[in-house]
Length: 189
Image 1 (cartoon, rainbow, N blue to C red):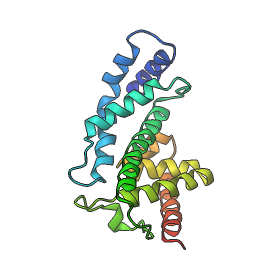
Image 2: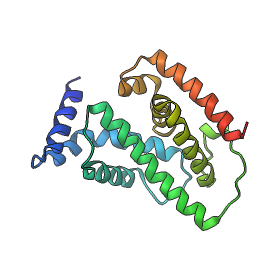
Image 3: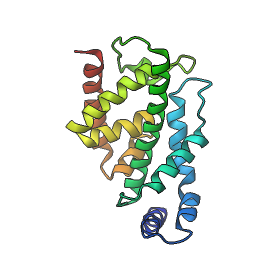
Image 4: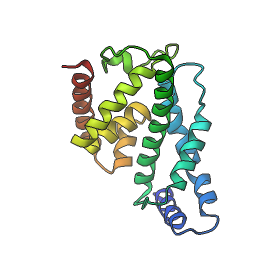
C-alpha cells in the first residue's frame, strides 16, 4: 500500500511540475509498466519490431507528456498506461494493415485467439478487436478496462481487481460478459 501512496504522490508532483518528479516516478513505476508491456507483447508475433522496453518508453513519454490528465491515483495511472500501450500497438498494427491491405473476414475471440500463435501476423485481428473495444467502452467503460488489463496486459483477476478498485468477483463477472459481447460483436452475430 505504501507503493500505491508513493505513486499517487509522485503523480501529483509531476502534474504540479515539480523538478525531478518525473525521473523519480519512472524509477517507481518502471517494473510494473514493463510487466504490463510484456503481457501485451506476448500477444504479438515473434519478430515484432517493438520490444517491451521500447513499448514502456513510448508509453511513458506519452503519459508524462499529457498535460490535460489529472492523475487520480496509481490505479488511474496504470489503467491509462495499459490503454496507451494498446493504442501504440494498434497504431502499429494499422500501419501494417494499411501496407498489406489484407481482407476483412470476421474474427472470433475464442481461446485460440486468447493464446495467439506468435508466429502469425495478427495485425488485422488486433485492429478489429480494438474497434470492438471502442464500441464496448461506450457501453461499459469498466468492462473495456477489464479486457485491456486482462487480455492485453496479462493481469490476473486479482491484479485487475486491485487496479480498478473492485472485487475479484466483479472482475470475473464483467470479464465473462465482456468476452461474450466481444465474441458476438467480432463474429458479426
